[in-house]
Image (cartoon, rainbow, N blue to C red):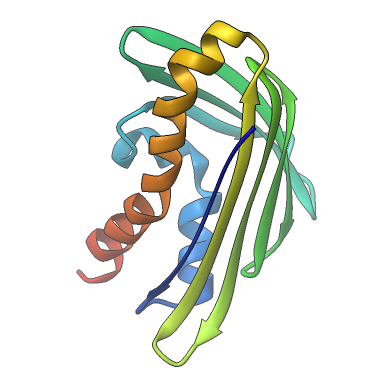
Length: 143
């Protein structure tokens, strides 16, 4: 199973960063490998999501249940898709400089061939996630 975690500081509020991550419908606008993303079945402390990613001609869709603590945390669990396992979490903590973002993802594909071909690409994409959101925050909140 592949795992990745990162921590970074950004000069924006936890509310601003949480809003960017929770606004899944906009992911295709700034995350190149995401071609479709939507949030549905929203509740007070959770929502369901559907995301389609594409790498080198391969296209896969998966569904997750996202548990939320608004402005603090989003915890993501696999419901269905090409993964055997998928867990992820975003944490947003106030810091003197703005917000500390802690991001974690762990995944394995069901199919060994997908794990060998897409695993490294998905792993690299996962490492770039936090940077994609930092750049998006700069574009939106620095105007």
